[in-house]
Amino acid sequence: MNRLFVYGTLRSLSKHPMHRYLAQNAAFLGEGTIRGELYDLGRYPGVWIPEDGTDRVVGEVYDLNPDTAAEVWPTLDDYEMCGENDPEPHLYGIQHVHAILDNGTKITAMVYALNSLPIHARRIPGGDYFGQ
Image 1 (cartoon, rainbow, N blue to C red):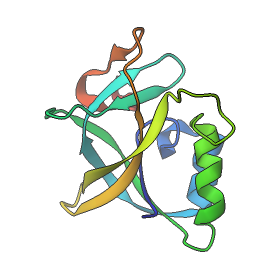
Image 2: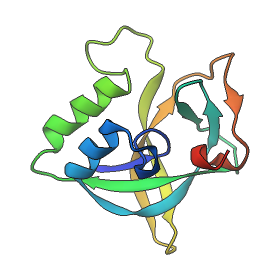
Image 3: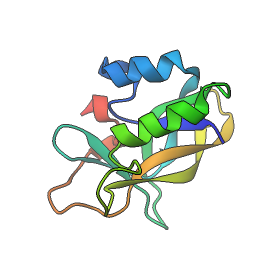
């Protein structure tokens, strides 16, 4: 699985250097949503995926280039502070999600989701980090 749903600093709207890295190594599949809750953690957001939630989180889906994915995933893990050299417990982990693209297409993707909800997290109504 090389599809990645991004909802914060990896989105194109962020203009972050890591978004440029992702865009150079993946094809943009479209904007869409996943089931979950979005939280502001200060300098970046985090998605929490409750078992029975119905809220949606806004983001983008990318398909990593299969020729470079083996190198790109560890770089993304390091950026998300869940790489093999990052101290545990990790704030984020990879989860499979079902995304619905804006054109109605349903796909499975990976997302960096919170492993636990930090006490200082502030819920972002509407689930769009750039729409707050």
